Image (cartoon, rainbow over all chains, first blue to last red; front, side, top):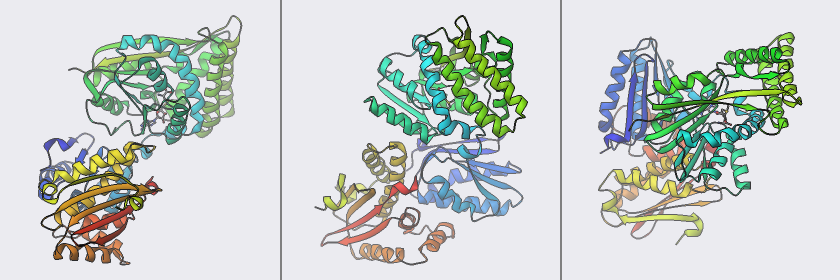
Amino acid sequence: MISKRAFDVEFNVNNQEFMIAGKLRPQNEAEIEGLLQEIDKAAAQVRGTFFLNVKRLAYLNSIAFRALGRLIADLAKRRFDMQFVIVTSGVLGWPTRKFSSIAQQSFNVSIAEYDKDFYPGQSFLEDGGFIPILRTQTRLTWRHERGILPKHGLRAGMEIADICCGIGDFAMLMNREFSPARLLALDHSRSSLDYARKVAAEFGMTDIEYVHGDASGIMIDDNSFDFVTCRHSLQIFDRPELIVRELFRICKPGGRVYVTNEKISQCFGEPRGESITAAYAEVADLFAHFKMDLEFGPKSRRALADAGFDDIIIDSFTVANTDGKPEEFAEMVTAWEDVFINEMCRDRGDAPERVAMIQRGLQDHMKAALHPSGYAGWPVWAASGRKPS
Amino acid sequence: MCSERTGAIIEVSMRINDFSSEWMNCDRVSTFMARLVSQKSVDPMFHANLFSTALNELLEVVFFNHGPQGSFTCRVGRVGDVETIEIELPYDEKTLNFYTDVLKTLDRPDVEELYQASLFEAGQVDARLGLLELAVDYKAKMSVLVAADQLTLRAEIALGWVQ
Ligand SMILES: C[S@@+](CC[C@H](N)C(=O)[O-])C[C@H]1O[C@@H](n2cnc3c(N)ncnc32)[C@H](O)[C@@H]1O
């Protein structure tokens, strides 16, 4: 018998989406007859497009696959006025390829690989250009975060997951400072993970598990970690609630989820404050064009509350040129300038005057940082919540 | 033993009747072995998931097709980039015919169409489905070695290409 717990299903009528997660390895088709009927019933309530979300379906044997495939083909034939979209994830090696064979059977069935098709800003974040940004940012935020993390519940000996870990430097710092019992770091960018693994190996850290994954469908069991972090990332998704839901799910009851986000328009500097402020307002707008909300910081509290967390704590801190060496701050802004101007403005097709105005403001920010009596800052919001026991 | 050929990493043995007394054994054995053989790979979760998916199909076929008495051994290993799986099982005439017939089928040029047909055509599940899947979807190389009282089903799969 397949145990009741081996798979979960959820039908969201508003999104017209039926989700199957977990493991489907029945001995015969009769064992999953109930599931097939539920899908059939759900599809009957939908008009237009029916989404079958299998992003977190980790295991599927050929007996179940055959049954699902035939059901979908049959539905597609009966409801030829509708579209059927199977939402897969590229994180596992088999689903997209396998489900494509179902799509080939019917004109109104198609596959959407969630991680590829739904994240408009992903191309900027996943290739190499972002690595210098992440590296300098984390170096600067750590001075603040190291002190506030215990207040948000981080202790030595915990099981920790860092979701959207980027190049893994924050994971390495936590590993060094908080000696976790387990530390898993997940990201969707293979190049960032390769970089992370290389750096960790150079430092002789072999105990961090770097995992390729999709934060909106994490292949990890419910209630797995004491402390789950997700830094500077809710702000890059057009539907951050999907990520928060996953952070909540993998966190143990009584454990905490810690997120940091920016409100980029609040970057400041003197001298030349006006030029700096004007440029960062434009930067917020630039990210919004690619469906990323770099103004998310203060919204973190609400996002955690809506997901069901309690005991929510929110802080903000300002990374400033006066924290340490001003050159480091300037280096971070240089890395920003490179991606904002050379990739994002270009891809948006900005007029030269607009690009020049943003570039001038960023350069003024650097000058403010390096000015002997200048003051330049980048505010960050850190929030955490407890998953109710 | 054929440990050089299999690059054996680990094996699990039990009586075939114990193995086939519970369906979940296929899942348990494939999950357990996949986790162990994947520990050292760059992305252990990715590798374990794929390995378990392939191994489970083989085990499910063996669950339904084996001789009445004897021992069951599942051995997995790696030679270069190729994963090797060997399953030793007791056989009778029916079992032997089943496996030798399937292997012949896998060599046919229309094996892909056969696989599609067994997936999408009405009727009972084709007992060969799991092996067809391995051959077509995983490009597994499969063979059968026959000894006096045991038959060895062997699969070689290069999982690297999937990534
Ligand atoms: C702004 S970076 C933050 C990285 C890191 N937390 C830090 O603060 O340095 C956002 C990260 O999210 C990752 N990402 C994008 N889409 C993702 C997805 N669907 N699942 C997991 N990570 C994703 C990107 O590859 C990138 O590394």
